Amino acid sequence: MSEAEQLLAPINQFLQCETPDSWIEEAKKPENLPIILKDHLACELKAGQTAMFLIRKYAVDKESGQLLFDWFKPYEDYLYRKKGSLDSLAKISSPSKALLPKTDSPYSQDLIDKMVMLIKEELHHFFQVLEIMIAREIPYDGITAGRYAKGMMSHVKTYEPDALIDKLIIGAFIEARSCERFAKLAPHLDDELNKFYISLLRSEARHYQDYITLAEQVAGTCIKDRVAHFAKVEAELISSPDSDFKFHSGAPVAN
Image (cartoon, rainbow, N blue to C red; front, side, top):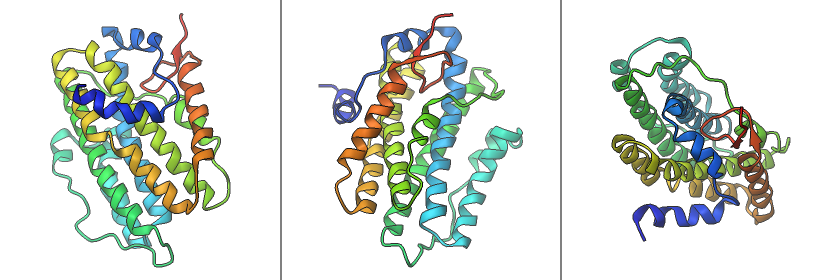
């Protein structure tokens, strides 16, 4: 069994379905590479933002929340406001001050530790995707969000701590599906991108487990039924027809 297969084995058990062959056929078309890379770039930032928002809302004091906001601002300025450059992004470092956990939350420190590590990796991958796009003269000219994350977020409960538990479970599915798609896509790409996507699989394979571990810790009880619910929702979004081709879209609808 290859390294990729070993990494994917638990991920494939966690997910309820595989990526449809029709999505792979669409994704491997050379003319769709700009869409894949632009959406991937946005997804890396979104993954980091999601982790940042969870820390700010549930785990740290106001001053630490501002440190996180400031950390992300140059990346958001680059993507959304066309401010900055690759060189300026390369000089950004994580907050130098320690993030202080809320004293009234028993899970704050674990949430901070796991999510900060995830943020660092997502922002590094954002930078790597951006490097590839610039080298290939693929501009980031904006891209609309697909239905995937929004479709799952519509199932989040409205009261705490269940809302946080649901958000963490959703994070696990998004991370797991990303890894599954890295592996599905890699064999159909040129050598540089093949190696890049396999490296992403290697570095991000544990992210979904971190999210599930945190969800279990917050719940303090079995979350099997809730995980099963989101597994069904996620599989439906991935396998059903989708007219908007994106990195996490469903089965493409023929034009």
